[in-house]
Length: 350
Image: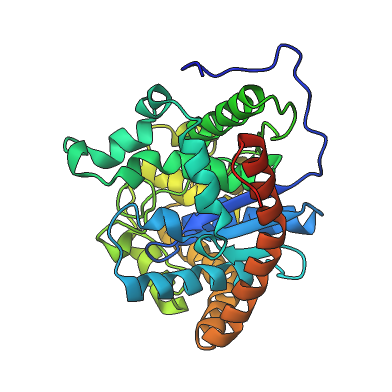
C-alpha cells in the first residue's frame, strides 16, 4: 500500500441512504456554546427530516484521564442534554459510543489503513499535547482515526463540522477513499461531506472575548452551564466583561471589541436574529440596558432546557433506557458493516 491517499481511477459514488452523524465528548459540563453550536442545530436537522445518529463520545473522552464514576455521570448528562434540547429518541438514534463494539473494531482496521504522515499533520494533537507530546496517550494521537470509524461505521454522508474539525473530516475522506481503492471496493464507504446550516455562532468566554467558551475553563464565571438556574444566568451576564463604549449601530463597529461582539452574537443566536437586527434594536445603548435584556432572553430560552435536564438527571433509569435502545439500534446498523469490512479485508470467517 502506498503512503498517500488514493482513489479509484474511475470513482464510483456511494449510493446508499442519507445519514447525519455527530457526537459530543463525555468530559465536563455542557454550556451555552454547546447548545447554540451543536444541540440546537442537531434538533433543527432532526426536525427537518434528517436521519440523525448522535452519540456520547466516551471512547474519545478517555484519551485523557477521566474519573470512572464521573465519566458515567457525564455520559448520562450529555444524553439528558440531547433529550432536553428537543432530540426525540423515536426519530434520532442516541447512544453511547462504547456500547457499540464495532466502533473499536473498525478503528483498528482503519489504524492499518491510515498513514503516519496523515496523523502527523493533525493540528489538534499538537495543540492538546503541547511541548510534552511523548507524555500524551497513544489514543490522543490516533483518535482522529477512531473519529473516522465513528462516521464511516454508519456510512454517514454528512457531518456537522466546525472549523476545528474540518481537518479530521478530510482525514475521514482520505481513509474512506484509500480503503475503497486498496481493497477494490469502489463506493463501499461514502466520502462524507461537511454539513453547514449557515455559520454556527462562535460563543466566547464571558471573561475573555478572545477565548472560546469552554467546559475546561477553571472559571465557572466564563460560561453559562446548561444546568445553571435563572439567578446564576443573570449574575454571570451581569458580571460579563465588557468595555465602556455603547453598542455600535453597525456590525463593523464590533471589530476590535471582542466582548461586545460576543454578547451581541449570543443575543442574536438565542433570538434567531442577525447581529444587524440586534444592533438596529440596541445600537447606541450602553451595556446597562443591553445586559438585562440579554439576561432575560437567556433565562427564557434556557429555562425549559435546564428544567428538563434536571428532571432527566433525577431519573437516570429513563436516560439509561434511551441509551440502551439507541445502542441496540446503532449496533443493528454497525455490526453488519464491520462484518462486511472483515470479509473485504480477508479475515477468517466461519
